[in-house]
Image 1 (spheres, one colour):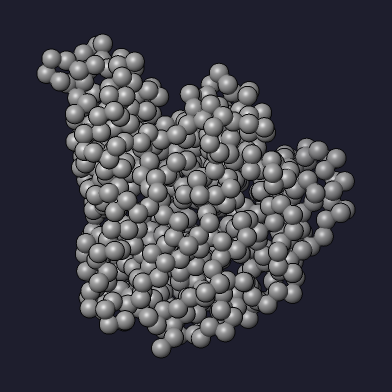
Image 2: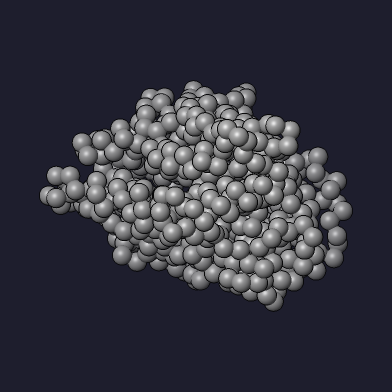
Length: 604
């Protein structure tokens, strides 16, 4: 098998022969859905949320806080502009953000799998090309998958471990056979970026740096850059896929610029001065008070609000349970009680956006109030002895009276700490039975003024409980290094979640990820219940069971009390030049990856 994972061939041989019964029923299709059939027919003309007649031209200039020292977004080392992963690379399949989890052919003209989903086969489009004009080959595909799965970022490793064999089945077709059937895996395999093998020959792939400008297949290529300051992308006039129905109405802008700033204040000044022509605002208070400068009043800058129906995700201060200080759930619960949400939200956010009540709130996947019932209760029952209070009975966030004293919740926090063995000495210092003080550092990245404001108020409350808390701000490079190594006590945590949670959940809070550097499991949770429910998401055979499994997982995560949650917004707030436009037909995901700048256009 040329350019395939030879060492897995033996494993492929022991994949149960019974799976072969499904192979005869398989046929190449234009798309694939997690459940049911794709909404769009084979002859669809464009995605529903684009303007198929959008003009080409113009530019968008976006700001980012921080810096970068790498152009390779597929490895653990280095800091890379996050947009490069999505704007300069393509995958075999592409997402329609108006469906929870459905893919349509992009580099691949068709996808094939069996009823058990024990394998997936892709057939490349004959016209698919890299930006240098060379064809995309099966060899490029196989090399990309194996390289990413072994040398790439850890986010790719778990999926690759579930591939028994990878092989060319024709001059333009490639098949991946799985170690066991998996409903989601054919879709995940369709979303891996495809790299040009020849560009990386003789190069250490997992080394960071800016010496190699990637050659890929996407509509945009890197035009010029200065490490740490800016990256300019230009639309490739010879882009191979410009006539594809899937791409019609996308990649309309001639230029995409990313300007980097030391902090959020400098970035906002860059917007008001005209250096940037778009700004995504996450704070409702700022949206209501700061966006009244002359360009807004003159109508040169437009304020757009874009609603969505995706889960809230989780945003807040995460506690690192690798530190014994936060190993006891009662301590973590006390930390949540001490967070005066009502007061902080009023000061920082005008009390506009609601509190995050669970990881999947704002969607059908979110846990329901009260005790677990029906299928959700059945899924949780085997883990009753492991689950924390609230998982089965129902869990709600504490509510304060909004006063700065927050007396009732602070008393509750003190009682919880006492149950966990912590009490104040004569000097008011919180200590355990060994006399050790309750001391930790809240680690923040420089430039995040909103999170800093929240931290300042919160830490004052923690000090009233007798805790010795230090806020430490470090630059982006140090922060990335320390968070990848789990070298912190508490830090800010943001994890966006989709309507199609799947294998990425292992990286977010799976047990194996707790000891995997660079994973998203910052809290360090290791839970048999979570691991089992994640696998349940991947093996659910119908939509109802999938929803019940997600709600059960939501209960375990929320009652785990790993994060002191902030708020979420059910809409994106984007201020932008009036020439930048988007379709009035919004996808269910709203402003999500693949919306700005992908489907925006410039119109005088």
